[in-house]
Length: 530
Image (cartoon, rainbow, N blue to C red):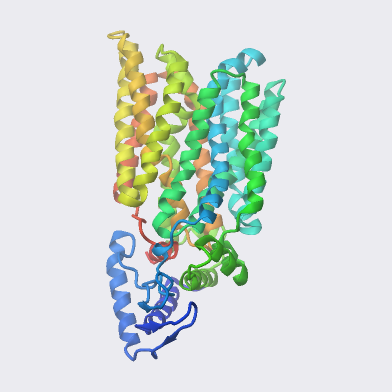
């Protein structure tokens, strides 16, 4: 295994070679002639190293020298081989591939949102106690914990498409088991199967979308993952008010079938193809994704070089992650995904109807309002992700969540003291709507976006597994204990969520790097040099 210094030296050597041809002239796409290497390449390499070290204080290289586009002169407008990745436009192949992938995200949202509208009907039909329904809600995350142990390995061995196929198989089995259930145990088995499938989806969908999209649209396209999760939630909240819980389970299985069919028509991730050494397939896939007239030589070369360097550096397993060079990226990924449910989002998503009922508010009104309000908020987040960056949106999101939790805690405090009971439903409604908007603006989707960007290809599978594992553990803690916490103290429950949300604000402000406008390779080599 090479040390970080040897990795840095090899990449700097490649950088000096790549920059030694200041101007290249081309008459036709793909034909190049250039000047010989500059004699002062070594001096430039030393300068690069010094600039890199200084800029790492911000968490990322401000102006990474490794992938600076080479100036080009060409006879074809916009078709020179010096085209930077940001020059690539959105192609139908990228759009369609993303749409197929995020069908899995819709499935995820349906599974998370299902337990809230189904609670009353399911408990009445099957005679479930509060404890039994708490187990039903939380066993989803228990299945997610099991799935998290293997999701990264599955995506690395079978490819991103293969992992999505397998995830939908588990989800289809789970939904059918729930729809046909006659007792609590069959419900648990169906929910457990869903959890395994969702753990794979949670990892592979944002990874796949990030790996196929150019850097200038990567944030927005990866954030559509959360938009479809919210769409699934909204569909469950809306449709669940008019159909039975069995019919709702069958409706939730529809996006699973759509993705299974769509996966036959989309390409594999080019970065995964580079990882397994299929260079011809890499070129063909990248050409398909960027368009037939695009020159992909620079991008494909960068992908190959970085992949080979990281793969040679180490074959990291789960225990190899705990090295100093991976400490920063691992801390950011784990921190964001663990804080996400612990700050109250899991409780509100899974048990919104229960919270509204506790506040003496009609559950249908609250659920429909949540369904309507989340989608525009996430739409705004998608538009702003690549414009303002990840960190500002995370800060705005967590601050808004904290203020909303304050309102909810205050409302239940007034209810407990009987000072102003009439205000409790109104304040709880305002607090949950505010929380839903603030959460949707950043904390809902950006942790997955950042997770898909910061891990190098050689540790992406094992690191992703660890992150999703810990995310599901924290999710399980919230979903299983929430009913018991509310029986203990409603005000205390949301006050605890507020404290964790305050920690999330500090985490976003001081530890999360800004990844906007960088290729995956630039981000990853910068972080691993820390």
